[in-house]
Image (cartoon, rainbow, N blue to C red; front, side, top):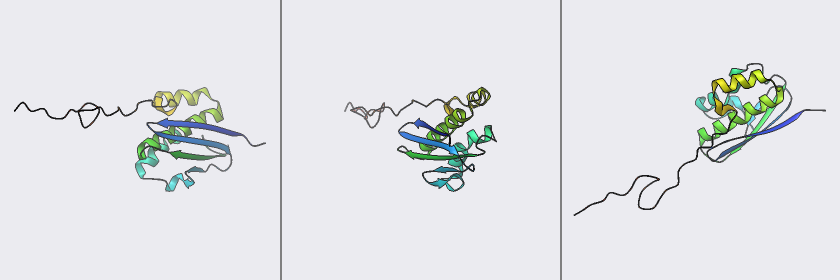
Length: 133
């Protein structure tokens, strides 16, 4: 029986859902292989969990679907989902320690959100200029 693990990652409004199953070590993001996905910067961001634990995805196929948010928000959501999946698959406390010492957001969703716009201004804090004459 094939082992299947589902994980998710969030960043701002981006949500990534990862499915890990036994395979050849292929990672696909929105049906595109990781090697061809996005720009160099986003690929580096996504592959951080793989670089920290090099033999982590041998024999595992990872399919990640990501929606919402912007380019970097999606990349960070994907890397969180991937790191969580690798951790669940191997169930190794050493991997958890490596990820947490490198960057806590690899395993914990970044809950920060954009502050809402308020009236009498152009954004959350900025106010329209006031004139006395």
